[in-house]
Amino acid sequence: MTDTPGPLFAVVFSLALLGFIVTVAFLSRNRSPNFTFHSARSAESPNSLDDPHRVEPGMNEEKFWELIAHAWGAGATELRHKLLIPEEAEQAADRLLEMSDFMVMSLQESLALLSQEDLASFDEILEHKLYDIDREDVHEYVDGSDDGFLYSRGFIVAAGKDVFDAVDADPSVWVVEAELEPICYISAEVYEEVYGERLVHNTGISRESGSNKAGWS
Image (cartoon, rainbow, N blue to C red):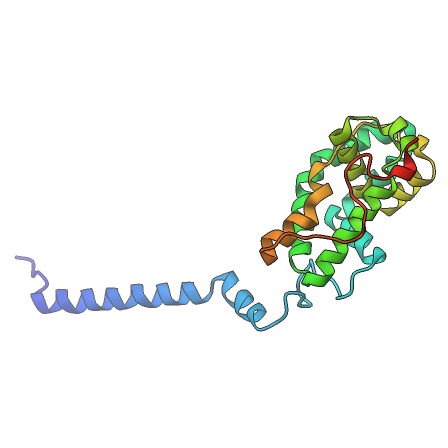
């Protein structure tokens, strides 16, 4: 007859197995890839050096355009430049619109890391850029209803400094129909979400279509 393990052996085996399971669970939890990362960042500022969305404090136009370019990623640089090449502009705009969800999300993440003052400054610069091209000569080539014209101007700003400056100087270079509504209010919405209050500027201008009275006859 084959010997069977006694009760004492069963108890010892169960305790050993339980200890092994507890040890593995403890080690797995502490080896989680996010464990050390979050602990390290908690003691640092949001703009820590290892953060890909880090921006030096102090917002200005140069940093404004850098944030927008960074949100697209390096892969979109050539596409954005092609917006100014008539025979390639439409295809480039379509491709950029396909990428726009990622761009908006990336920019939101960067904006959420800004100080309250810098985030407000970013939105003020954005409002000025939208206001500057709220003009009849721009509308002639961009077209669209009040909202559509605003969202089209949002795409032009999102396309970056080179495209914006080109359209601002000579609106006839714009040959595509493309809108990007989220950009028009992105920093104001992030501000309200992060700081719990509505962002109000006392600049006397507005991003809404038709606000730039000097630009309309």
